[in-house]
Length: 199
Ligand SMILES: [Zn+2]
Image 1 (cartoon, rainbow, N blue to C red):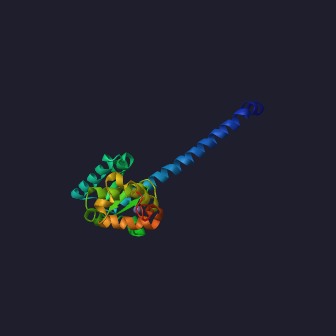
Image 2 (tube, rainbow, N blue to C red):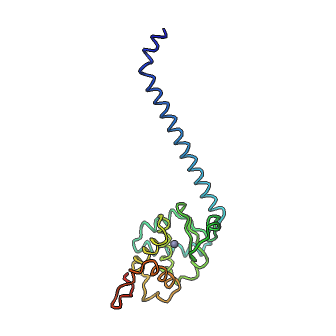
Image 3 (tube, protein in one colour):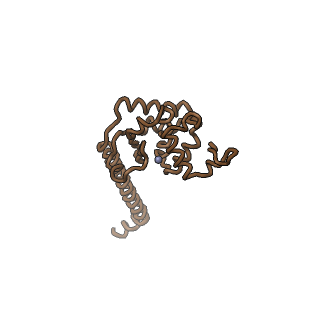
């Protein structure tokens, strides 16, 4: 009897064992993924709970700036800003913990939370200039670092109509040019003097 059983179950046993092992592995992976997802959701919720949302007039300014990007064909950036990003007007715990260098905005990647500081609403002279700031933040929302965001915004500024002839005396222009020039001197080696902006 025992011999018969061994013959029958002999070839089946390793398969059953492998299936059980695979199931155990998948269960573990599922558990890890689930736990990670829950942790991310708790972190995301905590970012929102620890900060305040925009006021209606602030939201309008943000929408106008996004509209500028959309009109100029920055479809991916506009989509992310419009549909995937949550805008806040006060620092969440993460920003408070690490501090922020930018006066206008801070982005928490990959949570797609953008905090807009009072200067974002008062310093830029119009929607185009706010669009330039949001273009910079959209780079961070896609995972880019500071240098990549600076370079991308400087290269694309003409497309949103943010040009030297109209904006060279604004605070946002001045600060952005200084930072970009410091990081990318080669972008400013054009013109007859070899010291003019190439973009
Ligand atoms: Zn930045």
